[in-house]
Length: 206
Image (cartoon, rainbow, N blue to C red; front, side, top):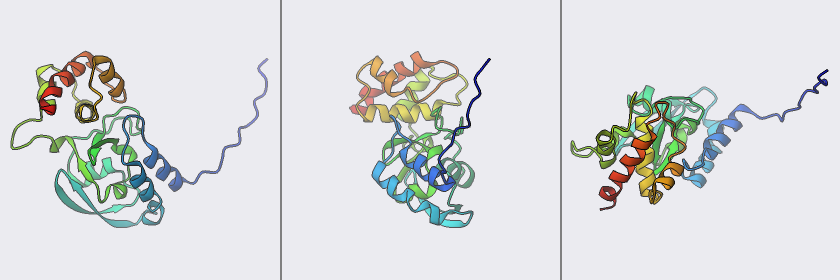
């Protein structure tokens, strides 16, 4: 007979504090500007609570003035308020990497970052990679190597791959796999993704 299980006593964690902590500490290879985001997380409780607050986000070199609930994630702000739907909402729990974008040049999971915390930082999405009508070398490499099938994870994969090279973590196939491991591909196009990163690396570094 299975022994009776005693109820587990959980600590009393306030929802707003939890949101601030998780947004500030959403890391592993997908880390944002830690100290800056952590400092802003301290202020989210007073700016949230269901009220609309003015937020100015600099996205792909342009400023966007918005009125948002202080609890709105950066991902939702981009998709629902700015109209940039390239960053995908996959798991919405920071586990799949589909929402990866760059914040001050560092990759972050935008479903884990509150929009108010991105104020004063440079946000780069998949829509901001191409320049003067020319695809970014990483975008072109993904096409050349057919590094996608359904394409849903592709924007996050490309943004993470760009950061992987710029961080200096594309020295070998094994290193690329390690530092791209936070981005999941349900279609299993991983060999093609690695090949694309290897192709784009010398062009980005040249």
